[in-house]
Length: 212
Image (cartoon, rainbow, N blue to C red; front, side, top):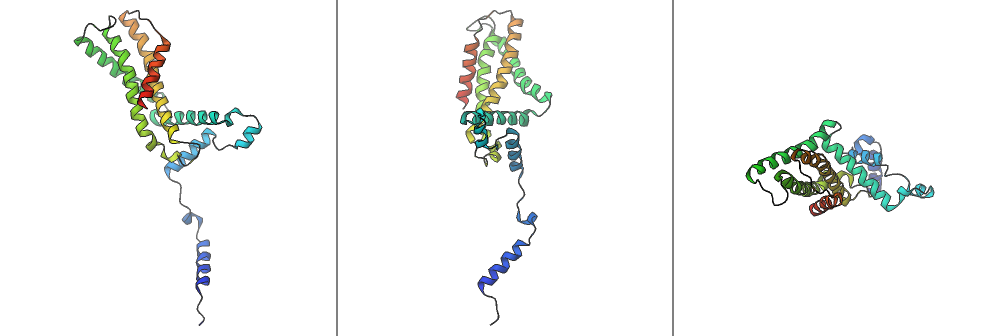
């Protein structure tokens, strides 16, 4: 009858598709995909693992890879949250620090004699800083998966990595706050407390672990 059969029609459709410009057939990467690609490129996570093993590179080990991924995520979270200027870092430390000072002074007018020591401000600060660490880690862990979902297309980045990166960032922020706040407070109050760095590190680590 002179009419093309089904096979000829399919072949014709394929030829038409082949002539469509690639810009119309290729879906442009989204914003999250672009962020993920930049993250992977900066972290160097697409390097050839076989070549790295041949050179004896310790970063090719599973522990080294996880450490690199976690470090890159912490840097990414720091840049995204605080920006690229020193003002963002100062505000990140100054905001909770100012809240701790105000709450400590306010409660000191109500409770003059703390259960331990002579300064209620110092007593209150030793409890509120670990609590705020726990609260910040818990809040950050809940939002970590949504904020980093564009990175999960890469096998080397896992959801646990994003949660741990948030926990590390929040913990380090409050460690810096404590290091700045307690020496100044001790100097102002004239107290002479027994300082145990190991106990302080354990308290902050337990508060962060509880937030996870």
